[in-house]
Length: 423
Image (tube, rainbow, N blue to C red):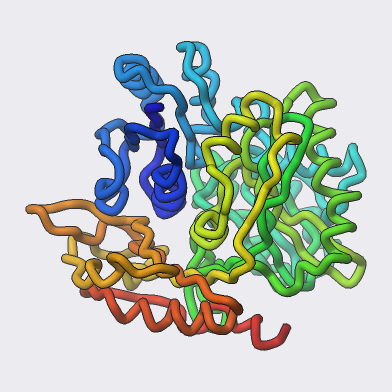
């Protein structure tokens, strides 16, 4: 079968790597792809938001399955456009992708269906938001309602800081139109855990737990990024926690979406906080996380095409989802200055060191080909992932492997997985 992956980051490289293993796949395309994906797929210069062009290309090439990676096209309705063109697509349609596309929608959904989450209020008027903050407990969390590349969340410790946050989100439009509406939420304390799941509209199958590191600097300092590293599974996602989430969060979310006439087919990413009062939902994503995909998908034992097709066809209950009994750690190599200002175009050396090595992966996030050389082309450049029997071994291997590659401006956190030591 012919497969087209939409996207061009580390998540899509991880998806492409898993898809390439399927004996069912005879030809793999990726639009727009990147230098790493280009080594295993044919990259096509179509942007992720160019829906009509994407549909035209897929029809012209007689694509059997389209897999949509990023959030923007999903929320924008690419699945609807591709389906209308008669194509088979993995990913939620626009009505279902609102689960990630609007923080206010997801908060209202959780409130209506008693899915545990933080207390909140929603505002469209910055003056009313500032008035509300006068009586609110600090610290407090401000969230731009729409998509903001994983960066539209501010944690404010004082009233003054929160007022500045309202100004930057709603008035200065730091995150663009995502800040037209804003959610103000109580600050939750505890361990953060991410859980990825496959969903076919009615059945949900949990993949594996993981833990992201959002802040740019060591010790969780600096600005929020798209993610500087990850480990999986999380030792804090215990059997007891999983049972609670199965009862109160996972299936409840799938059922709630169905009840709302927004049947969800694809991947739901649950961002959880393990509080003293039990697990609560921080956020939903309507797709594989990045870099969560880089630590979860390399451990998947099933043919991923079988799983994708089961989600589309509503037969996920027939799939026995299996993962290797191994741990994985991913360290992101970024361009110094990310997420604010950074330079691109630096040649990357040492990529060949990953060839033929089991349990080591180098997923490309922001790379391009220039004069037949792989160069940096983004804030997050590479995701270096290693698998091992334990989390500590996987972390040691990942930090060993980050030294195999180099580029000017290379930057990383040195404490990815430090929570492992506290488990």
